[in-house]
Image 1 (spheres, one colour):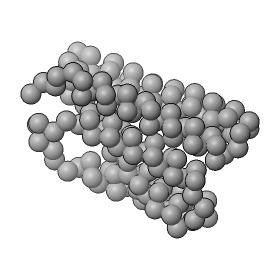
Image 2 (cartoon, one colour):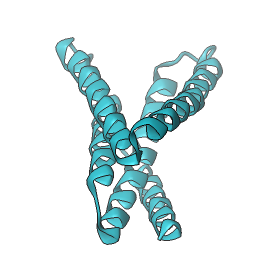
Image 3 (cartoon, helix red, strand yellow):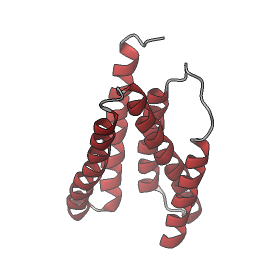
Length: 148
């Protein structure tokens, strides 16, 4: 069952990668779509925590794999488009450092939470934190004027 769930996550990642090849217009706001996709990932984490069906888990992992890939590709491309030519490499490396460092710190905190409260409670806490942070990011994006 675990292998099947991981395969579903991988299939979702492939779907997300394929979706990332779809050309987008200049007016398309990648960062907002990235944030919305990350918000959906928070909801998926909560749904996984409350789930008791392997079939639903498989579907949730496909959504999670696609969403994670789409969100990361859009955020990375947004940063690289906005960076000047002389800073693009530095910006990309800082993005990767924050991504991988954040995953490591999150895994440590999640491990401590799991040992104290159990896996389902830890996932609900993670999901609620992700949703809260993404809602705050969306609020800040919509509360200031966007360039045309």
